[in-house]
Image 1 (cartoon, rainbow, N blue to C red):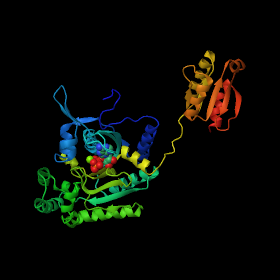
Image 2 (image 1 turned 90 degrees about the vertical axis):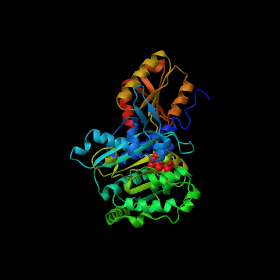
Image 3 (image 1 turned 135 degrees about the horizontal axis):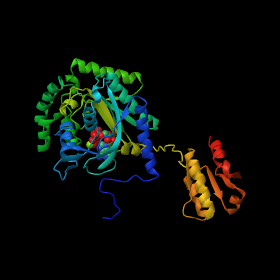
Image 4 (image 1 turned 30 degrees about the horizontal axis):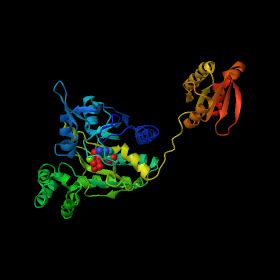
Length: 420
Ligand code: ATP
Ligand code: MG
């Protein structure tokens, strides 16, 4: 293994592609910030207990994918595999739900870790932007979150994504369905592990990706037929609100998702250009999660969108984000004295809010102009001994090629004017 190889299943973000990642995070966060969601940041690891109880003992995430570790002090920790349990834990710890301002609306952005079999779009370290609305049961809130995710994807120019929607029922009707499903599943030809899953979390069996399992599930009882009237009405309301907002969705009665905490509304954003790893984001209502981790009853809803797969989706649709060059002015000094003077000019420009960069290392004019070109700067400033003697710098418009001498004292004002 090369010394410079990132660990298996991980990759680095380097320029210029890293700029796209930042822009994607920003595009997902912007509609949330504009809709009353406050930023939250939690540690990269938690007590393992939180995920075991929150995400669910029978989920792949907890049984197979979690990175766990024992500290020197004997604490059992896990690198966070997802965001919701941590955010809810942090909200409870800070008593945000008691501030008399429900729902508590939060958004986050960060790294997540799952020990998975690495493949295109599936990594051991990946990045999500997520949103949680804690403490309120209101179909408008479910609709708001789905609409904001849709808005975020559309603002990036994405079009080939679909929204899959389902209801998982609540603590009244879901157990009845669960039993009916278990009765059905116990008669199927399934492996040991799946049989165990039937007893712990039978709904997860519906999510099995294997074709031979899916074939046997054709006649499985449908959750839709077991939803109580309240859940049905709630779901119809969410559907109607999405339709009224012009957000297209597909009803998918098999959609269960890989976490135990979901109730009622569940949804997934899938992109058709990504092959097997088609889910770019997902979420839903988790009315029971707070109680599962030892908190009060706090009906909540949220989602997480995968940044890595969203970038892959952009590439699949051939979308190049219009990312403006970050440098506006590039300074090229010719000689020692010019170096000091032009660096002073650059510092002044930066303080005036103009993005400026500098040809470091005393390079010749040709090499320095190459760097100026590569920086995408609209203007270059060149100064040699003769310019300094006259108290000017040469200001060149890189688009028109026009060049003029500008007095040193007026450079900042001139550039501010020209850059608008
Ligand atoms: P999948 O079914 O593909 O395993 P998931 O249901 O486990 O996805 P979630 O836990 O809902 O995914 O996470 C939300 C989003 O985070 C996913 O839609 C995906 O975009 C992203 N994501 C999840 N796991 C990974 C991973 N291992 N690598 C890259 N992105 C991931
Ligand atoms: Mg997964």
